[in-house]
Image (cartoon, rainbow, N blue to C red; front, side, top):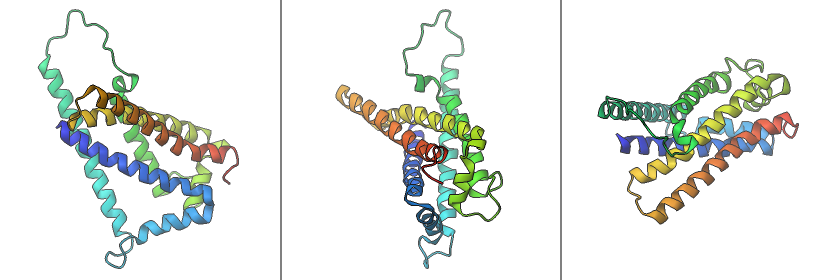
Length: 214
């Protein structure tokens, strides 16, 4: 179960970085961002019909997410069964803030993904007119009057960063890293990758708010 959780987590991290890089194309202009969004639907043509690659990728992501959640749930239940009687006195656990908030952070991330799909993928919750280009949807989302959307986005991305920081380190340990030097490198790399991801994602809404992207 730990290996399943580690592997599915790493697959999701890979997607998050690829998605972040795509998001940053909005800094090259609306035309560049829209071209990228439409290009995603043409990947693997003519081997696959238009849009099929996206659906295959979505299916793979759903499988990874479900596998990650199932593994986490099973491991949590096993841990509880291993200690059915609570400690009379349990000393404070020395762990990072990210480690202690993995569960509620995961819930926030799932809720955010659902909202994100309804907002920018289907356009159901997006304030832009129906049929708007992807760049217009992004800009409409993060304008000043939509401050609550930006706030939810910021909280969700920070939760992703905390989840990622602890998750990457745990995945490396699960897959065999055990040395003290390797642990220091893994912790540093996990922190760096998490910060890069958070900054990369949050740069878009703040760029819209400040007028850098319009």
